[in-house]
Image 1 (cartoon, rainbow, N blue to C red):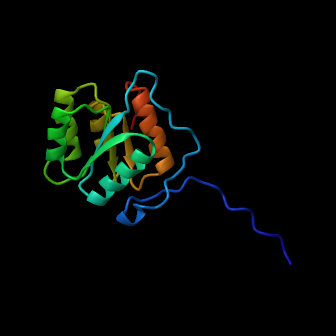
Image 2: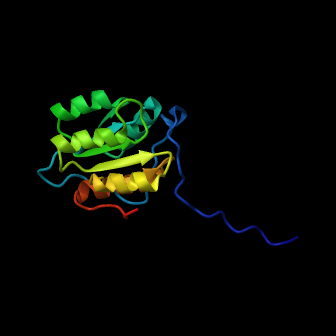
Image 3: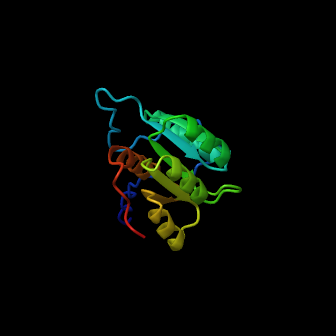
Length: 168
């Protein structure tokens, strides 16, 4: 009769952010998301992606993880909000029309140099990675995002704002 196949390998799924993913049960990472320490308020994150479905998907995911999140589909509006409100972390797509993610990061660093930033992109580019790290971007993540890893990186960026990802 033969031997049964080996059990499937358990791996954190890579979940592309598409509008069809919004409304699905929340992904449960295999680690606890740290809550703010006593005396600290809720952590505020700003997300910028020119695809509104991606901005919405990432926002909803992080809200389920316990964060206060503002999602934007254009850099101009996000930049205005960053000037007038407090955020603990910037997450931005790189390839966007108008003000690109790199240009947005440059402008944000001019007004809030200590704000940690995470860049995401569907197209990995080593030269872009070097430019981002020169701008003090903490992490450069490929799309589609593995949500378990994404949650882990967000936690690291918020808990250790001076820590950087691996160099390109």
